[in-house]
Amino acid sequence: MSLKFENLTELNFDDCNLLEQIPDVSDLPNLEKLSFQWCGSLVSVHNSVGFLTKLKILIAERCEKLRRFPPLNLTSLETLELSHCLSLENFPEILGKMGNIRKLSLRRLPIKELPDSFQNLTGLQELELNCDFIQLSGNVLTPELTSLCVVTFKEWKWVKSKEGEEDVGSTVSSNVQSFWGSYNLDDDFFSAVFPQLAQVKQLWLVRSNVSFLPECMKEFHHLNDLGVSFCKYLKEIRGIPPNLRKFRAVECRSLTSSSSSILLNKQLHEAGKTDFIFQGGSIPSWFDKQSRGPSISFWFRNKFPAKVVSLVILALQRPQFAETVRPMVLINGEYRGSYDYSYYLKREEGIVELDHVYLFDLRVTPFRDDLTEMPLEEEWKHVEVTYEGMYDTSLIKAMGIHVVKTERTSMEDIRYDIPF
Image (cartoon, rainbow, N blue to C red):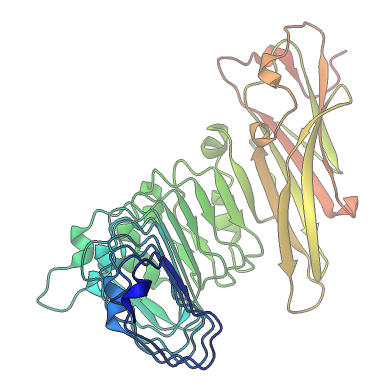
């Protein structure tokens, strides 16, 4: 290229279907953005692309014939996009420290593994992998990585280092706080990957093939958000994280009744701010009041109780529907706040009744006012918990309410029947 382009900062080859190769760009030292997405005939990229010291944005998505990408040593690079390159067999080697890429999404790539030099992406915080037959090892868990998402419809596994080499995974202190895995993830995940996730706060295994949640989850003190919805093989829950606050297990048809009972642990829910949805159909004995129908109530005077746990059992009968269940709180008939549970169910066979338990601390409901700061009054107030947005109230089979006994709550100021 002529030197008259040396001040060029942006070069765009998008949608050039006749372009077969990206030429030598070493004469463009000031290039900051290079894009060549949707180039259907592109088969090669010149090595000079990997040495543009001022390049900040590199976009090469949906180049379906591109098989190889040159090594990269781009110290200024902030954005790298390679998704949907259906013939790209290897992720590019990272020759030097590249600390400005914060988020990387690799979708629909045939790559089988990530190179050891992947750890040179020292600033990487979020990684999304949607690659078939992907093999992962400790080099994925860079020190700055806090969010890891792995989705594959075919096969993936976590591998150790080669025999005789130091296990990279054992030397890396993983800071992953959010892990999302789906589809072909199975029980091997717990033995292979779990030791690397001691700091995880959010763990979603939606639509995966796991059959149990291991006992070692009791040691995951940071985990507060766990999702296993649509895991059709999930049978056993052997351990519950002690600080779990949000849990989703919608339509886990193989879940045993004993496992459902574990999710009704009194101490867990009395600790406060839990928000659980799971398959089951019983109200535990530690609930203070039970009722049939679409609402339940209690009375209080002086201060609103510091912790109130509510539970509803729904019979889900439609073969396919989108539904919003909205717990609603009224005090003396006045609307105070509601909270949305949104989910989607799709059944492959005919109408099947599946009971689901919705259990939550009232404090997760966005009240219009801070109820704990209501003026002190000796008169009794009527609290009703009900549900709006239901297309059929007959789906509500039973409800329960439990006021947690705390230093701030005098049980003499709580009644479950009309106090006057």
